[in-house]
Amino acid sequence: DTLISQIAAGEVVERPASVVKEVLENAIDAGAQAITIRLEEGGCQRISIQDDGSGIAHTELHLAIQRHATSKITSLADLESVISLGFRGEALASIASVSRFSITTRTSEDDHAWQIQVNGGQTMGDAVPSSGPIGTTVDVQDLYFNTPARRKFLKSSATELGHCLELIRRIALSRPDIGFAIWHNGKVIERWASCNIEQRVDAILGQEFQSSKIALEHISGPLTVRGFISKPTSSRARADQQYSFVNGRFVRDKVIQHAIRSAYQDVLHGDRQPMVVLSLEIDPQLVDVNVHPAKTEVRFREGGAVHQFIYKAIQHALGTAAG
Ligand code: ADP
Ligand code: MG
Image 1: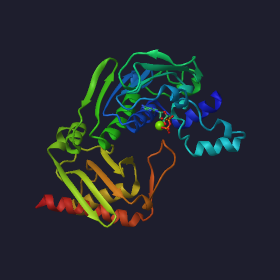
Image 2: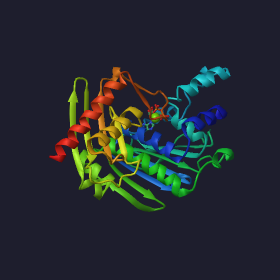
Image 3: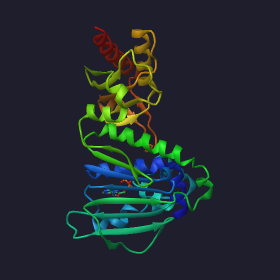
Image 4: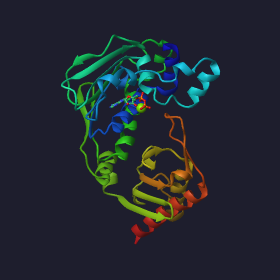
């Protein structure tokens, strides 16, 4: 069972940022309004994420860290099919199989918190009473301590921290209503209070974009896009400063990227790497969201129509801004 969890972990938990993603998504699912992320050495040494969500009932706690598909896996083919489905419902079990893991949680019904500890997939006894506010803290230390071959693939703290921060920015841009505090090696490095989307964009993308951004809104049939794009004149964007979301979820999509690039090119004859935060709403029937939880790709039923729509939205916003 631990071995299967470790293989699963290899799929889902590529690096500290993957842990951050899974744990943040759980916190958001639990209705968190404020989330504190504490990292040590880029998350390689420690990732501790505290939320003020619903918490987990004491009676459910052991289930949260259990693999759900164990009984179904009797052959390699079963294992492969589970891997291809992305181990839904098993992120915590996977993470716990390759780290020194604890979860401390308290619901509004409890007088105190409960804590369970798992070391490299071995649950260390029953939940024990603990202290703490309502909500959940997941603590992940020494990622891959028991799978040295994987631990070797971790990059420097600075690189892993960069990946963690990028991941947090994506989630924070999709949920400006949630407050975030980020600590690294004992110091606060970011604090984003609950706010509206424009304020969150300003907080995350910084001064230059703040003073040069154009608001955009375009609606056509089942498609709506809203967001902010950089003015033609500002050109100091990096390729990684383009954030697109489809139905609230961060995506990296060739159709959207190409539409953005060609609109800038055609309207401005240049500035092909603008800064962009775009949120596309589309009928869920018209888009396949990749089933693998660690991936960010989508597939549009009608890519051409989406391309044209984004292209027009940007062309229009740039044209309006020009005069
Ligand atoms: P999944 O999110 O796909 O169900 P996970 O392994 O990520 O699988 O989490 C297992 C379960 O543990 C969740 O379904 C949820 O019930 C519970 N859980 C995990 N994290 C939290 C949290 N921060 N707050 C409340 N419940 C949580
Ligand atoms: Mg989850």
